[in-house]
Image (cartoon, rainbow, N blue to C red; front, side, top):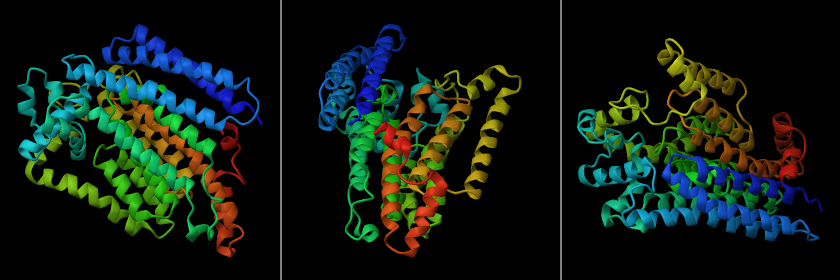
Length: 440
């Protein structure tokens, strides 16, 4: 039995411990420093445990999974709950701005049926930045517990971001591990292996950028988890459920809309586009149409104008990535950066039209590549947004594993199944993926 998985774990936890320690020492953001100090005490023991496992003979998958679970609790759940408790006790520097924004939008949703303020009302606030809600209307639901019951650790929006993301990840794993008699006539040969699924959970709940996001902000995590769930439903040939999942994500953040387009191209080839579109439309319509009917201006001021840099204050998302650098330092960059972003979107759309994805694994790669291009070229962007491609690439492993098993077993199911094998080989190479085996 190869020790490569344990070696990868050791390198992963060791590098993560260095990242957490550096964050604790050198960041200028108090919530990040708090996370780094706690997370260092989670990553380092995990690395020590893996080092011990390397000295033991035989398969160590269960112990690896136990270390992963312990690390996830130590670097994600514990710092999140600790900061939520301190914040409920009166500390003002234990959450990023997005947590306050979501909770305030939940309160406004209950009071006015709209989670938004108009630009003139935002300009009159002592801190105008906190008045902006750049999210889709559905995000305000995570702020409803605090609006109903007041500020307690258990009403902190981050806790519900974590619970929603965990529920989606568990559901996706069950879909990829279970069997589907319609596809395999009782066989479970198309299920993802335990090793790739473990890597997917590490990418979602233990990878430093994701753990830091859970503990300090968290609003992106249920969005990317719903993307993963939609891909898993698509793998099970359940287009309506896939549409509902990605529609729920789209009702939270605009980042989900490009992923919805990729999934539409995928399901278009399978005659499931109508059911997918119906599923997508339902959560989007339920959350957006009432708000647009009573407060279209608020939606425009917050989601559109502020997102394009035309708010009464600038967005704090200004990491030195190419799009921001072009907008900030190149003459005419304020126009050039959106043009570059639009050109990239058109190029990706053309490529999708000419060569749409044929498997959920290739769709995950399309989503990761497209979102990476968007985050790199957006005028207002953050390094933290790169968690989207990290999580999608992590779940590519079990998706690719499951897809390979589906096509291989389908080879014996009849002439139609042979087409699935041909498509898989054309898309990602013949047989089980060497990349999956290497990371297993």
